[in-house]
Length: 422
Image (cartoon, rainbow, N blue to C red; front, side, top):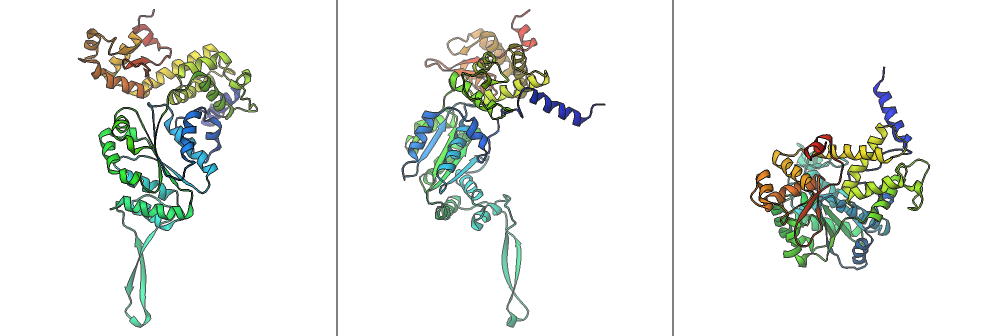
């Protein structure tokens, strides 16, 4: 009888058969303290150079990193912070993803306080907001004893959980304390502004202008549409650098694949693109095909890579041949579709996109719009963006019109028949 332990051992054995100790692809941000980030981060030299040029100045800067969903903004931000931690040990670097329903000052306050675990005042700020600290903090009070000759009696109780009344002032106080220990400055990186409601974030940015021009460096990330689009036009003076991230080119994506595989490969540290061993368990031709399908989008690259290697392991393959890759990509297409959980109308737009190959304001017809239940392309545009967010479509770089194409993955059997296959 096969036990759960047997299945686990078989799964591990299947990965090792591919020459890997683990599957290296991941969508989750990698810990700043991990050496893995330094090994796998690839490209963006020009963007890094622009960023680090600013850090040669004494003046504190405000930087906006923007780009489409899945383009690698979080990874870029974490790489910048990782380098600063190595090169500027007297600089405090902090990272936080913008929480829902919080202003930027409170968000920054939380980020800095978390990075100062030895500062009691910083920890009291967290504790009073109901955020766990390493040790429980107590509020002390004094009560006179019955015999006044012998003094008073001390008692302790939990600090009350409250929202900061003046988060900007509290942050300013905390930054003063931080700079006593970190004379090279404080960097506050706030990620994922584009995951909040654009109108809310616009107000948050408006309210935080004074704070952003204060004592710390601020690094923010966002999507070029909605909130960030407004910031790029109406708040030009707020940022010292507006850094746009584009898709990676094919050679850089190929090198990224080498770096990921090298970080997990057993007894093979080859990283020379001219050596076929550098992409094992891929073959050079399947590695190139995988990189082409990834479209230079790091998130899609990781999602596809995870499924392709999992499929190869299930097939007990030793190398990823064209047939194994095709099966992996087909499985990835099905997984992405299932994870998207599309509505009926979103599914209609997806099928139309697969049928047409591309959709734009210039190419869509009235019959197409009637088929998906819209009157104009602008109505369908929001759903096409939703498909892009789910890695089921990608926006083409065209100056004249907004155009979308499907991700070039092999269709499932049902899709193949619906598209006219036999």
